[in-house]
Length: 68
Image (cartoon, rainbow, N blue to C red; front, side):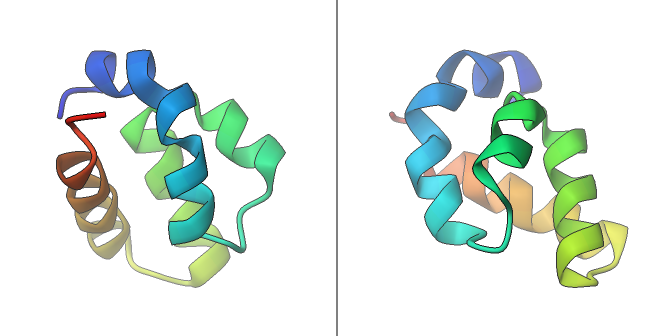
């Protein structure tokens, strides 16, 4: 899913994102604005994942939720 689509649907996806990444705060998720790069950076930092792992995780999340 490209970033523009994700940003447009981000408010709908927030609940699922909170479930997927419970250690991220509501404020952090809101500030990510559905931007894959920002979200991956937060996940990388909070969960101690590599950049590549975080990017793949975000891509899978967006792909799984593209029909919202």
